[in-house]
Length: 319
Image (cartoon, rainbow, N blue to C red):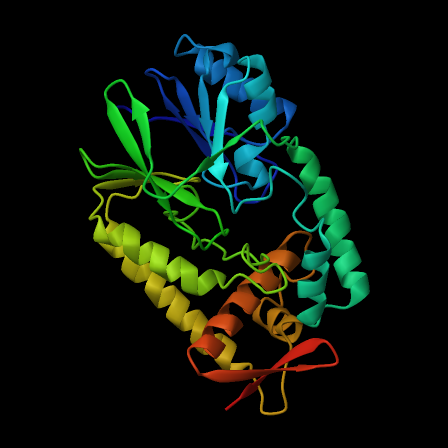
């Protein structure tokens, strides 16, 4: 089984997204890129180099539902005459915009974000959501942990690897211990643990960083020989990147805890200090807030800080 990597342009600072073509029955794409004319043309021409058209795709598998990974799903599916689409049931980005639901507003305001800042964030993500077409119920099926995706020469095992998003999935080729892991493992950058409602109880936050560390350890236990990420080149030395990630997370934990005061701070306060240089730049504000909240939640879970709710806002304080 061969993974053919296709680099598709995105309008985001992270750069190109990796789409993976598996050119055997059923012809499968893992991720598809954002819904832009440029991305569609690049994907179409890249498939053409392998003698394929959108119409030849029989299955679309999504690592997660961020716009740069899932945006072209409906277009490819429709041209392929209803190709199968598979995505984990905890993902929502293929259904509605990232901040479109009331639970998003509630969770963000609880973190100390002023309403006018939330409105600006929502306006930004309303525009970002245009980079994907929503799928209707019945147009996709659910990926389940440990299920097998069958091909003519073997199979890929689905691994639910939550953290970056609640429903993020990776795919394991056991025969040669290779992985396709979306944004769970990236060679050049540490994945952002995105702020999301908990899929089981949307009134609560998903504990993204704690879940991510479990997912990372699970992938490490497989001793992968090569890990293909959602951006950049493959990772050949998983041990090196595992330890680099853990050190980066530990360093960030120390920095976040150092910003917590006895009289209490909000996640919004911490994010502004943690990312002072980029906090007011477009999408970076939400990424900064996600990172701050993830680390504060993790520190509180580990008993390093305390949190209390006052007038609907969470305040973190030293113990």
